[in-house]
Amino acid sequence: MAPGLRADGTLKTGRLAGMGMGTAIWVLCWPILIESFLNSFVGLVDTMLSAQLGVPETDAVGSAAYILWFMGLIMMAISVGTTALVSRSIGRGRLAVANAAVGQSLLLAVTLGTIVAVVFAGVAPHIAGALTKSQAGADAFTAYLQIVAAGTPFMAVLMAGIASLRGAGDSIRPLWAMVIVNVVNIVISWSLCGEDLSRLVTHDGVGTTEVLLRNPFPFDLGVLGIAWGTVIANAVGCLIVLGLLVRGAGGVQLRRRRLRAHWHTMRRLVRVGLPNFFETFGMWVGNFLVFAFVINLSQTDGIAGAHMLAIRIEAFSFMPGFAMSLAAATLAGQYLGAGSPRMARLAVVWCAMIAAVVMGSLGIMFITIPEQLVALLSSQPEHMEVVPGVLRIAGLVQVPFALAIVVRGALRGVGDMKVVFVITWATTYLLRLPLAYVFSGVDMPLPDGTVLENPFRDEPSLRWLWVGLSIELLLRGVLFVSRFVQGGWTKSRV
Image (cartoon, rainbow, N blue to C red; front, top):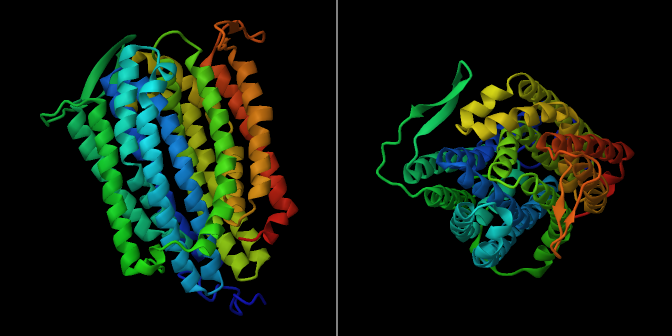
């Protein structure tokens, strides 16, 4: 019997102590699942409200989302290290080490969050022109990104705090924190932007805008209001999570002395988090280059916003997969800490099966009712013309996408970062980028002013670009599942 398990195979320590496998997964999964939907709402609300403002504003917020994604990668690197170290320490019954990890992760979050805020607020005006197609879009991009960047320290602490609680096995309190974050974001963003909520309705082939809910507030800040809603919501969530950690309500506790730099603990966090950053940075660069393809598919506004709107809708599918990956990371980490690789494997299998069922079901919706989904979020005819076809393609690969997300998250959570790094970079640069270029038909402008003409397709197409991306997701799933079956990840150290 593994030293950290009871005679019945359940964990001895932590909030999951005494729970059977099914109960432990349920306790972790359902709050994380709901929380993931709520997380997706933060970006979805920004995209939906910007779609009410106009096509240039939608493109601006969609382009800014890729920059915000990069900023989030830095914060996620801290969170991954925190979850791995806290969960492994809890599994071994070493609460003092877990509390030390909490304090050091928050210290890193504040420091890096401040640096990121200053850098990206400064570069926003200089990159706006390259990521939008009009002056109106560039102005909206700059205004939105500068305000949201200023709130990065709040987002960093919020993410690190939630990672600490989740690593300790508490997924209920992070859920309620994110409920409040989403309510604040929706109310503040909508009240400040000054736009009614509406949708596009087609009668006898003629599209008309139908107002669903009129905005009763006197403000008219446009994208500035949307940005301030995000910042204020993250600030509120930050305060809530800090309060939970100070009280020790989630199984780990923030103590003042743990906020002094402790290099041994910080090195352990960085040892897991830094490879995770480089792994996800490679993925970000690849996806940013794909976004460059998207921008150059058309010479007018609309295509970037349509691409991002499709991603926001698809997020309702892959966010449950992400939720299961976090649950798998926590359980696998705790079971490995308790000395039971067999139970760690079983936890990952269960989480992957749940994700496949949920994401596969949502994929059927993308295939069968994409027009209705798009109409709920945008009143722009340009979006209705393009996005439904893209969603149908995405719906076909939701099951292999689920397996890739869960297994990748579990491997990251237990510290198997070298293999995750290799698979991510290989699939991104040897598969994703070449397939996106070949299938999209995009002609790419080069720095010297010439244009690299695409020899594979005559007509550039966002829909065919997504075909290439979907093929890559299928192959990525195969590679991650192969690593899981091989089993070397059970010997990873953090």
